[in-house]
Length: 368
Image (cartoon, rainbow, N blue to C red; front, top):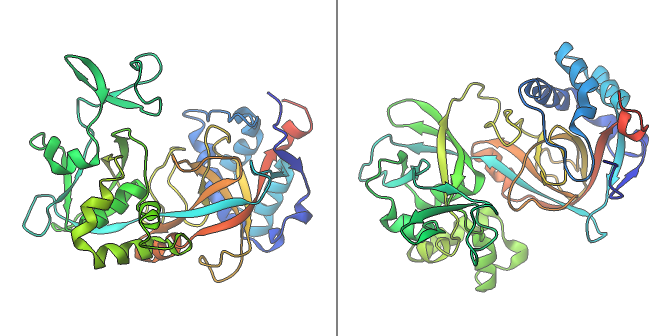
């Protein structure tokens, strides 16, 4: 497979902010992927960055644990060639932000804690083109069996009205429906349980319907101007209109199911699609159909200052994906865990240039 024409070669000296970045932080994130591929290799994206072309860089990263900043920079410059990634429309790319919420929760239902996070139901069936019925939405990846055959699974409204009650699927109970919804959006959370335990829930599966964001709905209804839609403005609207929460949230028919996971390192985020813990400020979600997990991206977003009050110019590692992350120059930046990270992630929606660091063996046409 050859490299896509979406890539155009450039040089490290042409990358804005390259000399000023903390390459050791990016190296630490890259090294986690280097160990994961010993268990299972990453699938090659359709833009042609072959997963096995990282072998030499991964081997060195496994052997050297903590290089200093200059050594880490030298590592990336030795093994990779920067390529500007063209957006589909010819304009700039786009970055948004995501984070891992933290919430107080109860292991049992109480008067205060009455909003459940659910595990995957036993009757949720994975479907694809091999078992999808004629006329069924081709987007659907999950369904349920009935005497008449496979049908669409219960959606958010049906589940929150009790369609899965009595199945003992509750992992934990939250106090606020809006908090639970944003945990669904982020796909993971740290829960501070009332019995003193700290646990993590992370994505297990979903009901399968298309995601419809409340920001878009509120904008279309004339409630919040599109340019002012942020997580913070959406939360403020819900707080001011508690009687309309279900009306808006149920228009997003997609529902997320979770599984419990340990918090092994409090400084890192959940284990995501690339099967490694996310690194705050260094892991990025990309379109996994196009890109290959483990690929380093130098991302330049001059108007984005939420991370450190300076224009965003950082080396990130592709370690997650998401249904809304589509296109070659599209990324979702992991901001970390907790409320402070949420304040950052909630306002990120900025134009950005993406520079993929492609293994030199691909650019030179030599496969070893």
